[in-house]
Image 1 (cartoon, helix red, strand yellow):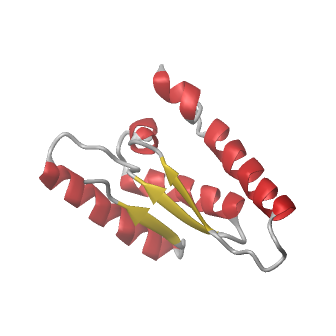
Image 2: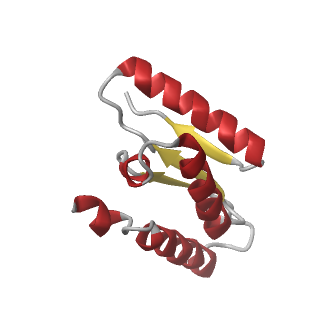
Length: 110
């Protein structure tokens, strides 16, 4: 399906993309250039992991490692059909990331 094309069945395509992106920024940026790397994933990570906040947090920890030393910003890791569910899953994800000590900025669209 569409998710396989964007992030891969196991998330490897996106992980590899972030790694290559980080390498390219390091290659062409000045030594002191430290951007925040911002990726909008349109709910694909949530879909891949069955909207399980803990599994998404584990995966985002791997993505944050791939982005290091730059800060990682992920937009729309989940796209739920209902606003209450959206708020709830974002809250669970933020708690899971905090518990795991993963520094990822989560951005909610709309």
